[in-house]
Image (cartoon, rainbow, N blue to C red; front, side, top):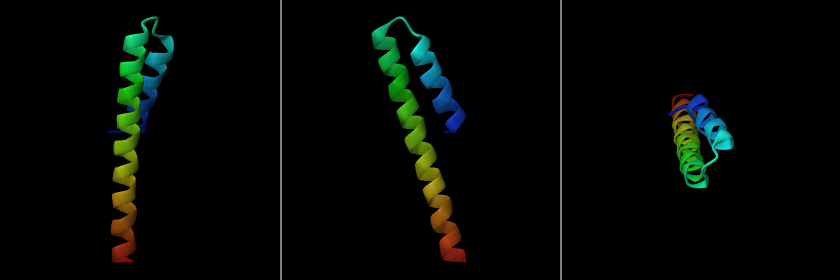
Length: 51
């Protein structure tokens, strides 16, 4: 789960000639972004509790 993975999926989707494949790649990009946001949120909450 990383922002670079999300970026790579989005770039591959942009280059895809197949609409179904592009939609699947964008879906993967969104899931990667969501996972990254959740991980960052958890880190922030942990820091706030310890601080």
